[in-house]
Amino acid sequence: MNINSDVLIVGTGIAGMYTALNLDKNLDIVMITKSTLEECNSYLAQGGISTARDEKDKDLFIEDTLKAGNYKNDIKAVEVLASESLSNIQELINLGVEFDKKNGFLDYTREGAHSVNRIVHCADKTGEKVSGALLKQIIKRKNIRIYENTTLIDLIDKNNICFGGIATNEENIVNIYAKNTILSTGGIGGLFKNSTNQRTLTGNGIAIALRKCIDVKDLNYIQFHPTGLYENKTEGKRFLISESLRGEGAKLVNINGERFVDELLPRNIVSKAILEEENKTNSKYVYLDITHMPKEFIIKRFPLIYSECKSRNLDITKEKIPVTPVQHYFMGGIKVDCYSRTSMENLFACGEVSCTGVHGANRLASNSLLEALVFSKRAANTINNNIRNINLKFIDKQMDNKYATNLSLLNRKTVLKELIKIRGDIKNELVNY
Image (tube, rainbow, N blue to C red; front, side, top):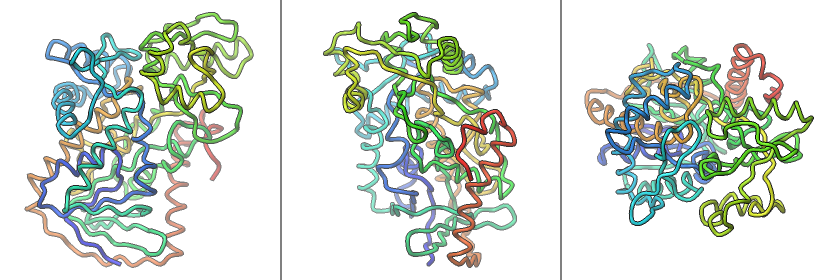
């Protein structure tokens, strides 16, 4: 089965959808997603989106991002992120996103390692609300086709030029030809025994890049969020207790009720402090305590966290929340420039699958969705300006079902082997292959 298009977008998270909405409306766009639209990892984002509130805040935002990243960041990418942050927030508002307001103005909150309040949010359902607003706009576009339950397994390429991708669904192997291809396949959380990510995030895009000798970067930089909800189970997706609770005043205490760390330090530092405290107290968790805040405020500000914990017989307005660090984000990925271009011609990467270098060794809280917005729009603008100069070539790529199945397994093994090679210390955290 063959499908022809101008642009193929692999992934329907915020990075993929925002790219599609910024592409010219006369382009024929095909989007594919590994599962269903609702199972996208973007829907899970709770905290919010960072932004430099004005020119005065821009330099401080840059410094906060660099400091959190241990100054391993790409400075040019960080400057782009800060400079174009507010305009992209405004574009989301224009697209129908209703961020929380206070007295008629955006209600900026604060999270770890931010010097000031600069994070816009939709209660604690920011990812869900932004994704929903973007999807409403996507559905209105007659030039965009979406195929669910369709997994990319390989690229159609020749002489380091990309001409689309090969995908599988429940019935067919599909060759999708495109003048430009955008990988927005997300991170690697599904390869870990415990992660806040959807289990479908298995590093598919990164595996294909490794097999095709496309440049990758910083694969050793893996972030563990300090406050995953502790549950007495061995493996699976863990519910995230957003950093925004600490931004609103929640305190971290050990099992004896003693504070042991500044809650608003960078994530890697807080995670390390929690693990050390767990060892000291011979416990599998510490507590996050927000019981000193008014009940009405907690329920209004954190409806998702309140309801999820309540479903587990935990009332966060009265009880401390057991938390422990859990894999959350991947700073590394397919190496891209500030226009999201990879080392393969006509191939772009956006969102968590990419590595712009903006995060350095440790991502600043609420910078992930911002990165997706800023660099997805830059990718779209680059494609808009150049696609008319590209001739679509049809390369015969025949593949049977058995080979496609083997290739899917190979993609999974490729990433696992690479992670173990460069980060042997996390081998026991990974699933078996």
